[in-house]
Image 1 (cartoon, one colour):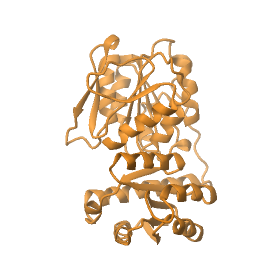
Image 2 (cartoon, rainbow, N blue to C red):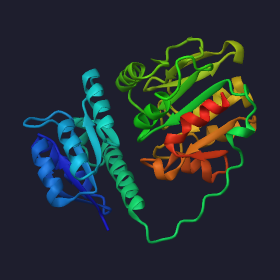
Image 3 (cartoon, rainbow, N blue to C red):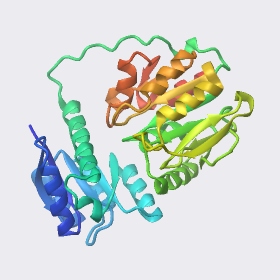
Image 4 (tube, rainbow, N blue to C red):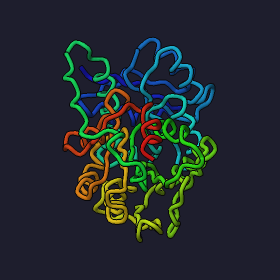
Length: 347
């Protein structure tokens, strides 16, 4: 059965192009179009789509107001479309907080090319989000009991962990907020975050987290020393590496390589952390599409580090953590609400 999508934007041209692009995928069926938030609410009631593509800024009723109402009445997976501005980033983060699961940058030029990179990414995101809806509603097939983890928090010696390195993609901002807001300001070690996100958004995300957390959350800058109680968010469009020795490690920010699919890339950060901190790393792989983090987890396991992954039930998209678990690199699988408690036990 095709994934049912409602397209919402105040531009008729943009709606038509999005609908055409999505309809080119046999797994997707566009069931309706709305031009403002109020229409979106009415059509969600009528059409019951699996996924909504929702513009952030619209007349009559904006996307965030509409999303809050939709999530109250008929919770639906929403993909936000946002402009590449600081204000657009702030609004998009508000939308994620209101219940949206992912976002894409809105580009009239990019959306005009049905076979272009942006069109392909749009279809991929909608498929992934839609498939996660179907997976979460399937209850008729008995699920295989999860394998017992190879390690638990009790098996990590107190004081062994010197760095926590977190990787995330789709659904990551909300998952990260759940973890970081539960950690104390006097947390004794540094934390790095590699979240798939554009450059404008990572700065806004770091500021938002800093306002919500006792920890000090900043967008990482080149040559910044790693300090206890600080969280360093990799800047979008760049790569974040850890360099030096563990007692005086620093962050290095470098331009990305065209051969790398992601910028920032979880694998890159993990591999560098393995060189500097060896077995003293706790890597956490959260919700997200694809397999970024799997190769980095392999390198970390080779030096004796610990890897935890988010469980399927609490993921928006069970891609990245699934790839790490299936490769045999996950020591412990946890629901998102359990991470902070377990982290405090081992640090």
